[in-house]
Amino acid sequence: MVGVTGPPGTGKSTLVDRLIESYRALGLRVGVVAVDPSSPFTGGALLGDRIRMTKHTGDRGVFIRSMASRGWTGGLSRATSQAIRLIDAAGFDVVLLETVGIGQSDVEVVGVSHAVLVVLMPGLGDDVQASKAGLMEVGDVYVVNKADLEGADAMVVNLLSLFRGGLRSPPVLKVSALAGEGVETLRKAIDQSRSKLASGDQGLRLRSIRGMIVETARGAAMARFASVSEAKAGRLAEQVLAGRLSLEEAAARLVR
Ligand SMILES: Nc1nc2c(ncn2[C@@H]2O[C@H](COP(=O)(O)OP(=O)(O)OP(=O)(O)O)[C@@H](O)[C@H]2O)c(=O)[nH]1
Ligand SMILES: [Mg+2]
Image 1: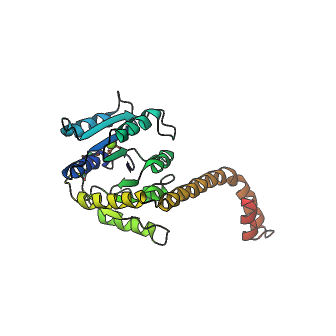
Image 2: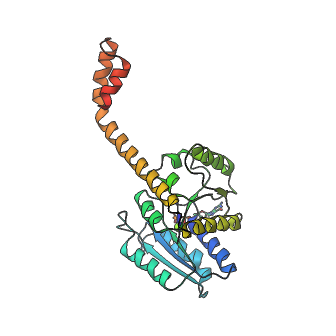
Image 3: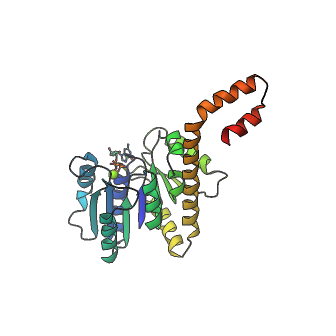
């Protein structure tokens, strides 16, 4: 199972389509489950997925199932889990699971995936860093898609600098799904990650989930801090101004 996640519109479906081609060229059978955030009746994106992937209809080596995630509350919906199990049982060689990166759902994807692909694009910049727990934690491979657009190199540099000094240094690859550029390199990186996990290296998984716990806790602490501190900080400032309190002591009291 390969999880493909990332913010809306970064080109996940287009890339999945390319990966299907790549695996089919190797003679492997591919199953795809695309979890769409919008309802099947009103969502344009779902329709988009269907249209994009119609070129595989008639290919018995490809099975695609789109499902709405309305009511997705952080767990893979039962329908999604069933679809995944079905595809697994049917003996597909590769299963791709596309979801929009929305915090908690990523944890679920990490839990069931042998490789997690985080698909980003130029111009996301700080949004990515600030993104909820945590696109920066879940990926085994990072893709800067739409490399044909300006800012792709800057985005790569940005990502690499985020990982520098950290515990992990996942590959960061430039891809243009539209043009089909960089897809083979990406496929190899995915397979490398899959085989690592298949050989029992759960450490990677544990590390990324640990990172997500820390990020989630940090987010919760910051939220709590922000909601209680304003008035108190004002009162402490008056005391500091009056010379009754040092800055350090005021800060310590603020978080107490
Ligand atoms: N310029 C450029 N556009 C791309 C590339 N890949 C995808 N796109 C375009 O980006 C738009 C979104 O692509 P999708 O594949 O639907 O993106 P997605 O991440 O699946 O979107 P959601 O499922 O709605 O989150 C489409 O208009 C694609 O044609 C690329 O490599 N370069
Ligand atoms: Mg999509």
